[in-house]
Image (cartoon, rainbow, N blue to C red; front, side, top):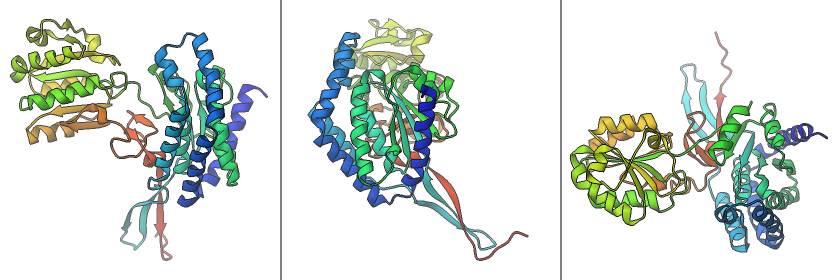
Length: 418
């Protein structure tokens, strides 16, 4: 079979398996996930053995130490993967939930019920734990899933998928409910993106280059976010110590992730006092500052920010900073340069807090909190499949509920339309 024929076969089988998944009760799905978690623990030595092949290939191919660390699996990390599956099993099942019901003048009862999306395609890079995380979320929400991991983790991903498929088969559930593209050719991705007859949605997870490639080549709807250009606005009424804690945490705690702070905005009325205060705190944390002219007036050691800096997702200890005239200017800057990921205001003014929440339209908008909380687990979703900065069909961190849609349900007593 050609690559195209293999991909079509995998996608078609997943479509058939999705019908079986949609009918499973919450109890059966939870038991399945617990079986999968235990199977990972029981087969940890085999997974580690296969993972070593990926690590050896990665070293030969010059992967960085950071990339090799993301790729590496040991028994402790595999236990963490199993624990993550158990956490998904413990979450409420969204499938079948009736989200509303209303009565029409003709006595028809009309409502909406949550149902699975169908077949979810996930294209991801590097971390092999995504294989089990994504599978657990998709299966719990009643979907089938087609996974395509990065070539650097092919042996690890195949080992994990094979173990999880055996758990499906042991419960007489089609193994195709969890499919992994078993080869690394780029053609596998492009052919997967053509399967609109069988795959309902694509979720890419990885760098901006991967995501843009998927968007440009997919015939299937894509749920995505390109990058996280996250802002904090320090209002004139902000408590300085609170602001420092939040800003340092948002920038420094883990700078290489999409919910880290990238641009700091400061109200002009407090700039003379606050800029030196926060610049010192950030410099102590080895953060490189790039500011506009007004910021550098009070922090002369900062470099000059360019127009490109306002769009930048640094993913390292670099921070762009700007002094703005007022809240209007702060919101205008955010709406122009943000990536619709996460924005936060630090303020003691209730009215300004409410206005910020209303007028800033990113996926997550915060008051007096670090942008690092923009995460499915931290927001109480239990786990997340990814983050969406597209407003259809989901917006912000995506949990189980976001892997479902709704259908209308109608109860009648013999009504006919006049």
